[in-house]
Image (cartoon, rainbow, N blue to C red; front, side, top):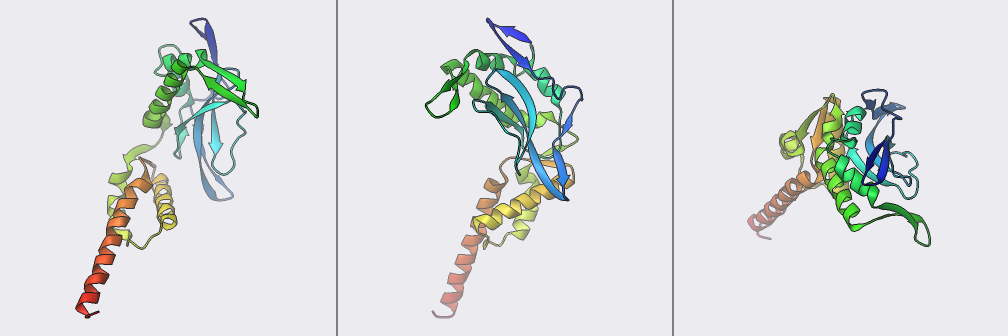
Length: 216
């Protein structure tokens, strides 16, 4: 327990006995990626948990949450807890969030409310975890998505893929990278879209040239 400016918050010890927790499982031989979540509940208590994309755990109303690392692998829970304690990289921002955090009834639901300073701190934590969340992964190498996918994307994409097919290819390549112990950092779909669009433009130009040569 840590006290800051008259407020206090708790760091849950639920998963702290081990140094890491595996957040990627094979269920019925189907690989499902889960995210590590840092949550702040209605009682201003921090927790670290796994949330499955295929169903997940119930998150209570009024909870604030951050995705720590949306990637297969192990999340070093001990490291995350250390960053929430005094001297840790998240401690100051976390304390400000807690100090300005309340849960209010909005007429329909209990919803989290933040003071302006707490909102600013929340955004700071969100940015830190979005950009640095991979620091909590163990046993994985983080590679820029563009670097990893450059060759296969240019060799495979034809320009005929719609958005659904492109997204499926991206997920497939992310999964294949994961099997090799690689975490792709960055938005895979945003990297693939301009390559697909360029090839699509080339297809259209090629068709127009063929029509001209055929005299149509």
